[in-house]
Amino acid sequence: MNSILLYSNPFTFSRIMFPSHSPIGKLSDDCLEIIFQACEGCPFTLCAITEVCRKWYVIAQRPSVWRILQLNKPASFRAAYTRFLTSEYTTSRLKAVRSLIVSKPTESRHAHLSPLPLNPLAHITCLQTSNLCLAEIKHLAQYIFSKSESGLHFLVCKNIETWCDTERFNFKLIQGHPHLRQVQFSFMEDGHSGFASIHNLLPLSADITQTISPAIQTFTLVNIRDAECFDQHNLLALLEEAENDRYEVYSQEEDTQYEEKINLLMEAWHDAERSLLRKYKVFSNLSSLKNFEFGFCYAWTPNVWRNVFGKALAQNPQLRRLTLHGWDQLAKLEKLGSKSSTIQPIRVDAESAIAECFESLPNLNSLKLVDFIIGPGLLRAAKHMSHSIQHLDIVFGKTLLRYINEPAGVWLLLGPLKEFIISTFSKRLPDKIRTITIHLHPILFDEVESVPFFSDTPLLKSIQESINDPNVQIKLIENYYA
Image 1 (cartoon, helix red, strand yellow):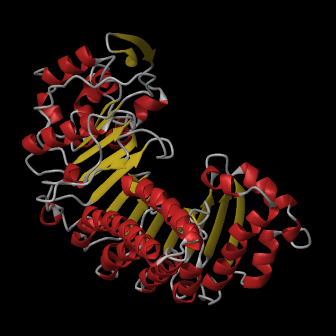
Image 2 (cartoon, rainbow, N blue to C red):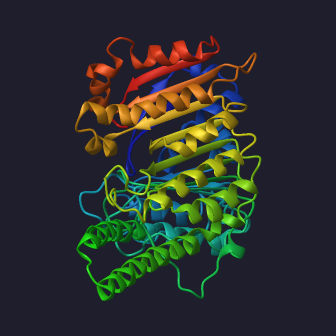
Image 3 (spheres, rainbow, N blue to C red):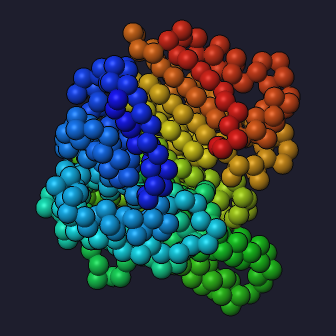
């Protein structure tokens, strides 16, 4: 008879006996090794495996079994993790660990993790976190950088806690890791709440473009907010108010005061723009990108699109996958500054800059737009993208619902989308299956079903008939989480 230990908690195990001639007893060593790898790095499960029998003990010592170490309850099991990490019996096994996964359950009240003795983990190249705050991530990354012999190659941080104000996001978090190939910072929820997701501006003396790894191939920064966006909204309201007062100007002195007020407001606008240019200057150091995901773009002005994003795309012609979140044509959908003649040329120029950015991508294979309004810029660039695009994903979620207060709002949202899709897939690519997926929030999905614009021919059918390509597959999905 052989036996297997099933993990229930760090201190107790339940032993189950199975005959030596049972199916699991007949598996080869290599098959067992693959099964042990599927334990996903749980230290207690892996330690339990070593106590089943001599054969399992020997197989469990293989480095491949210990490539991943997962600490998913560092607060509850801190004492058990500490004993595990400091035990003389696990020292040799921990030398094989290359990927460290640290996560916490969803918290109702945030509390920082107590430090763990990670000294034995001297060969970590991949750090993955979930539900941690930026301060905890920064501590882990710096600690691993100081101890690791080969340095971090992958830094993947998901569901970052946004309500902890100890540390706010800036690119210094990835400074000093010269070997990084993949970087991901995905903030929790939708990025519209909390403190940590507000992108901080570094001091004027700071320039980290030379210390960010140019070898990064996958870069993801999602649900990040720019404080400048709030400033822009205030300035748009003030500009509109000032221009409305123009009709009450009756003297040369009042006209001079009006011009000075407009100039002061536009200078504040350009200050916010210069701040954005400095913050995202780091993108100019990325020259090996294959996958790029960023959001939000709400605050991006024409100069940011051209001199930051456009330059980054120009030096990454190999870029294959691009995802952008959040664009409302500089608050046009919110009707801020809708009557301002000063801001309209800026919005037009921003759309022109967007077109230039997409026209600089010769090999773009996959494009995903999340809450990203289709405007003249994308409509202009669609013909260029038709030569390479194979996969297009459009997500319209709850953020856009506030703009849909009448049937015409649905058409203003989906009319340009339909035109963009038809133009992007106007060129046939022989022997290639191409896909279009449209994700709509349930409320928006119901609106599409009921508005008169699609009463004769549903949206999906009208797009299919216009494209008329059997190699193009189209899906319209009702997605509550969109």
